[in-house]
Length: 73
Image 1: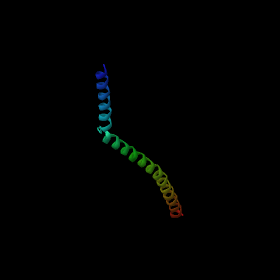
Image 2: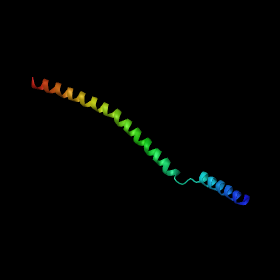
Image 3: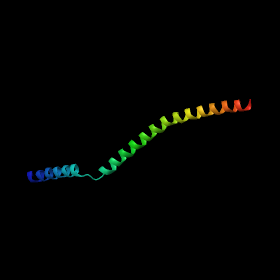
Image 4: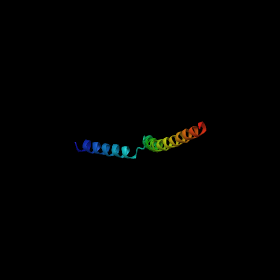
């Protein structure tokens, strides 16, 4: 009976060691985290750029309106 128990303990220890050393799938997780970082940073960049583009269009619209008024007078 003790021999069977020792075999099971040894098997469990080997399984844990194998699981601990196994690096399969590690690359997938790293690439997923990298893609998430790129997506979030891109979204943050576009959100801040959107307000800047809006300001440029607003200034351009005002300038063109002023020029059109001066040209028509």
